[in-house]
Image 1 (cartoon, rainbow, N blue to C red):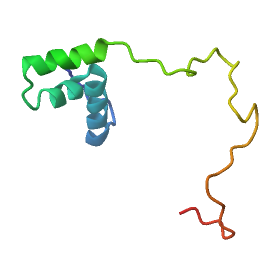
Image 2 (tube, helix red, strand yellow):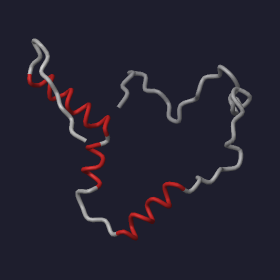
Image 3 (cartoon, rainbow, N blue to C red):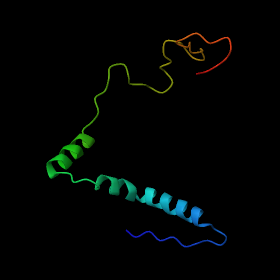
Length: 92
């Protein structure tokens, strides 16, 4: 699992480092390093794996069939904001 980067013509060190980081992320190396940063007991690892592989519970009414479900507002209706807009137009 070695990652090698060759310098391209006219490429700066910053660009090369950015390319290296992207390759590491794509390989899952950074995720693996973060996971192995602290010791994890085998029982905790098994529990985490079991939790990851168990199916998620389905909430009632959350199953959608494509575009059949449109919600309470209907198709194309504008969403009402929770608080009134300021006459000055300031967002925050």
